[in-house]
View 1: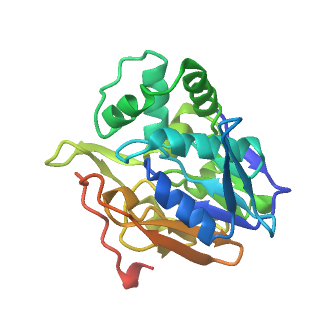
View 2 (view 1 turned 45 degrees about the vertical axis):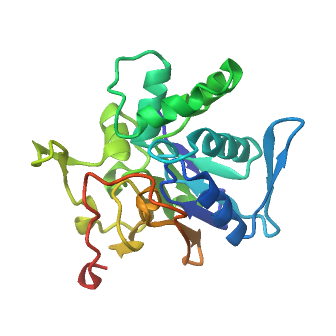
Length: 263
């Protein structure tokens, strides 16, 4: 349970939204961002480079619902190992870790697909996945504190804090404690009142378009639901997206409606 504070890391960064097993879209997005992605067959690993020294930052939820969560994990693990990327934990990543550890979790909401996909992989790969997921921070602070990345976002007074409560907010976001008609937790709109100086980039709640509000940006554009996979290049604030190659899952929770008035 920790955050990762790297003030000396100034970018450029390409911050990538919720991938959810959409491996082909991730490779296409990385190529559009000018990364070279090559697979070394002999060592069964990806080799990644960028001509301008960019690094990727993943906002979490690498797995579940999509067609190829294991290879998404392999690519991101290789990027992090080669110091080409950072990654925070998402709630789906955390649930996968708990399942692999043998905890009693409900195998649903796409976890059943990841579980089936991983059955084709050997124990060494599974062990590597467990170590990787177990070592992910709940939020990352970069560029002298000017940039914060957390899966579900994080209000300013909690930046840099470590506790079970902060970790839960980073993974799940604040909720009202009540559920909606579908039995899902009612999420609170923390970004509506954000007034911090640091830019907070997050995902977790799908939106049709990248949503800037109050110095925060939601870049979960619902790729696994037939939307897009989106990246923000920082500090230039350039948005790059690729359309999903298919609709792999249906969203139980409707996309948050983007409104120009709230941007």
